[in-house]
Image (cartoon, rainbow, N blue to C red; front, side, top):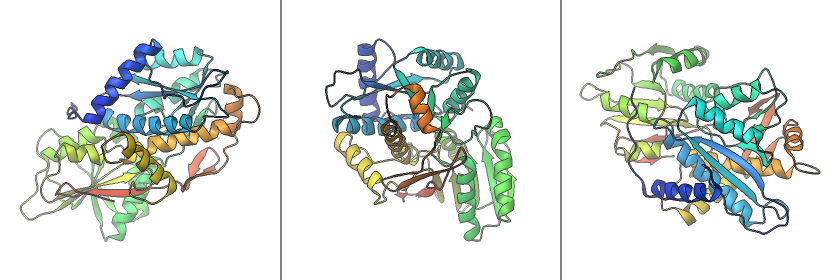
Length: 381
């Protein structure tokens, strides 16, 4: 299904210009978080690969913006014991060969300590596969935007912190069951997503005694019989689905989406038909919450950009904050190997109210929340 192009936004144009200037200065597709202090030692280098293909850019741009805010703030406060962090952002556009080439360059760069905050879902998952194929690699992937992959074989190089799709689906369906919903329509944006996500959806539904009906894939008008529809896919695909949604007069419908849907962008696209509301499950606290890390994100965003906060931007901010703390936790000389050894201890952490704990290799106890885009274009939550 072709993705609908996103409308230009002032901040996005600003980011593109900054990325172009940074790339020219560095001799490659990299962007730099400006260091705040001088040091005789070279800066610490962290790389972030971001998928800017049409179906992913609404998530990736906000996520990268949040990470930039965190690294700029970290450097302004003195970095790590006086050493700034060089934050390299490498944009790629969904091409597998390009992604492999970028990863090989970073793997061969001795100055790159780790991958951190790689986004979106497909890119982060593909990087896990590349890492596992490289025997002896010590290049960790820290806090990516990854919800579907579980590292059970090969090298222990992945350190996720966000709730996975199973946790998001369970949260969404639990809320629906508590509202008395008994039957749920399910829409998968692609055949690949249907194959990947059908079993987790059905498992979560059975646990809550919910009946599900997968709606047929079609490019024409859609007339769901259920009042609640779970949508599995990204923002462009959801925009297209909403455009094709046809409800009988007087009927209302609630669309429940997962964390890959950016409600801010969806609202700007004017995609919500009358009598339809979209509820998006989020892998982070509400952006209106009073938690210290949420307040810090909002304050720094307001200082630089004239735009509202988004869950994806908050996730990028949290990802970079977690990575900075991981660097600070290393005892002795900071190298790839020493950082990886420290990460493998998987110590619990509270990042200003965002709690991170681990059960084995899996993060547990992280926040799952929901916000709603009402039919009048207002975001609640």
